[in-house]
Length: 105
Image (tube, rainbow, N blue to C red):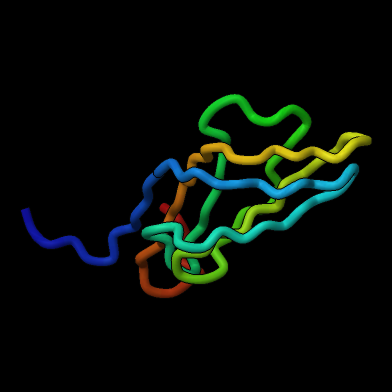
């Protein structure tokens, strides 16, 4: 067994967040700081750890800086949604290979 360099990394963890009100037929962007382990440039995706709030969907997800996650919450309904606190699962991937345009094999 030897040393492996430039090995891609990935993981998943749960985090408690508070989702602000999302207006009717709207997308609300919300930023969450102090998310441990995330680095700028990581790929991230989220899902609800339990039952999602009625009518609320997940749109865009991105890591904007180290430890900072931005989520676009989608409300396609005709009324505002006030979800409050919930747990989400954050899936992350970090490409460690040299160069950003390396093909995945």
